[in-house]
Length: 363
Image (cartoon, rainbow, N blue to C red; front, side, top):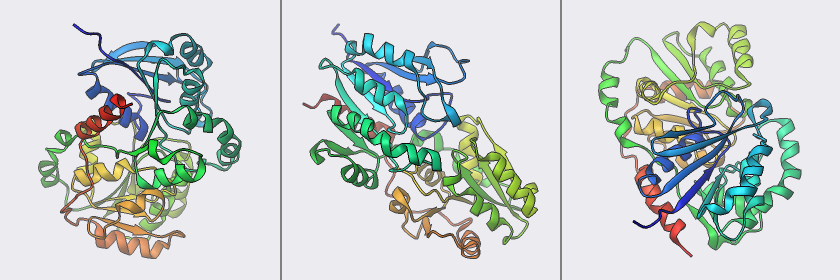
């Protein structure tokens, strides 16, 4: 029996953590594991998860890291591992420009491995401090692009940003969007039929960060009838600010916070929602929009970054910055409960992996 190709997926965090990069790496890795030896090399800032374990046929290696404000994910133990063992992998596929594991992998790269990079690049840091650090980091971050044999973007917006900000050949930049596991969404019609019709649910899913614009949805609640409630799924450093604002505006009793939901619970939240709202200033793709549409829930997004690529004024509607709260409230009333039809942008994870294999196998 021939030896299987060994592939390392390098990312800041991995399952059971939930997020756009985490979902992306998990979904492609478990499918690639059917045909290849797959290892996910990642960090664990808590130090509580197993250092090595197998999940869905994937070997997961975790390294303790320093992650101030749950960012950067600095792990010198990971870098030492890369220097010693990275040559053993046929493919090294690094993810996320905005954390250091991809940089460490690129610095340790030798000519034995093909190096693939999926940046999930936003173009800016997500806080004032991170944005200041983002500029000098470009000097180091450029090395990841230079070492890459192929660069995979998840949207046209991201590709355009990379061509603008880094000196790379466009011929080695590919666009492969995030995918959907359609089997997970087969139950959505049944879930929708069982929904409480006495309330209107506005849904947000994602990290709780200021740049995500959740505070605008909280302010819009004050303009909406009391049948409107906001469900916030996620965790992050901005949570207490959101609670303080909601208490001040007198709408805290109309907000439900969820975190650490498993996939089945998350899909129920998507399906039961009347509208998903994502007013983020920076997104490389917007996977929660894709998942909401798969759950047949209409969306409102900011006309920014890759989110504007979703706007079709049929299933997804855009709002401009600066956000006008009265206009946002009226749009929520108009969009909530609309039927989602003729969605054309969604790709399955199986299709994503087939396109990925062609890049892995190319010269």
